[in-house]
Image (tube, rainbow, N blue to C red; front, side, top):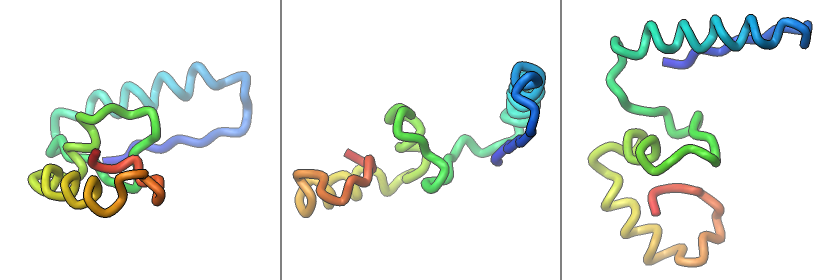
Length: 79
């Protein structure tokens, strides 16, 4: 689930952020708890990354640590 809102008038930021968050909160109990990899933000914690990669997280972290220990690809991924 992705709740996305756009508006043009910055004076209405608070109003639109509020309804967007309310919609997200209302729908969240009906989701799987997983996360879409392409919608992860850099500042999101490991919990969301683990949710995105699911049962593959540990295996992918091992592969990334072995093949990209310097994080040259900048994946912000499993490890």
